[in-house]
Image 1 (spheres, rainbow, N blue to C red):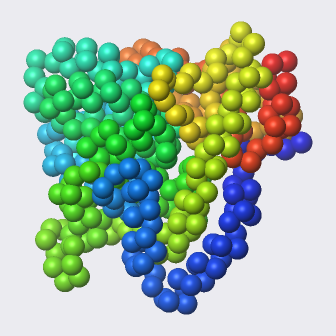
Image 2 (tube, helix red, strand yellow; image 1 turned 90 degrees about the vertical axis):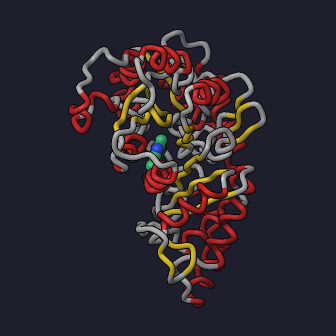
Length: 369
Ligand SMILES: *Cc1c(COP(=O)(O)O)cnc(C)c1O
């Protein structure tokens, strides 16, 4: 038996012919950078997110960097995120010259804890340098955006949603991307909507912000020979846009399948007192980029599964404040106890839209044994 953590081949066989047709068209037209497919994809994905403006980029780390820069954040500023995330969230803050600070997560949903954010802000003598928060919609579930946005307003902080793992996630009828000043999405191949390489986007309802992000992504220009500012080169390839347009048509169907498979996992694991299945926030649509449980003796369970050919992951094993790269921030073990506890107990079980119920049953039998 060999069950991978995720299997991209199912989605691809479903859309293979359509994608080959479309990419052949792009190649025959020799329009590789920007172009018709990029324009159409931007329209379609903005509509999917229920937002007015979108800027596609080379990847979502760049989309985060451009969003921070476009909000005017730079040296001397502080931006708050969580330690329990992929490093890109924090890297983007440092990349614009600002300082990273962390707020611990909720133990139930693994996302930024609004209560801890509030306490942190109340503890500061001066919050003038704190400019923004970046909550992460981890594993496919949105952070508590209602409360986070409310606190951010009170302290005049900008809100950037890291929605790299949460295409189409919802909270109280709003989609990821609708709550923040800006939100960023990744189309890395393994994400819920994945290209055939790196790709990403920033979405916003603020036209000025969108134009700044657009300029930053394309050498500081909105028209061909006028460079308003110095920017970067980080655009979506027309070929990638063609791939994404085809796949976007199936995203809702794939997401519904992810939800069904997650529900099946939860049903088979719910009687096991040694583990915790994903908690869904009231009013939320969790899109299960990953199906993550917490379990006693995590490493032993992983080894046992691995011997049976079941591949699992840990997202993420070391919280950012304990990573060598962030040693300079001066944090130590015990500073963010929930992130540390969670990182020792989590396992990501195999999850993709077409995983069959028989495999899930086998996996759960091993986990429960
Ligand atoms: C994947 C991911 C990113 C980075 O996305 P890229 O497109 O690879 O740059 C950022 N944040 C989170 C939470 C991610 O999962």
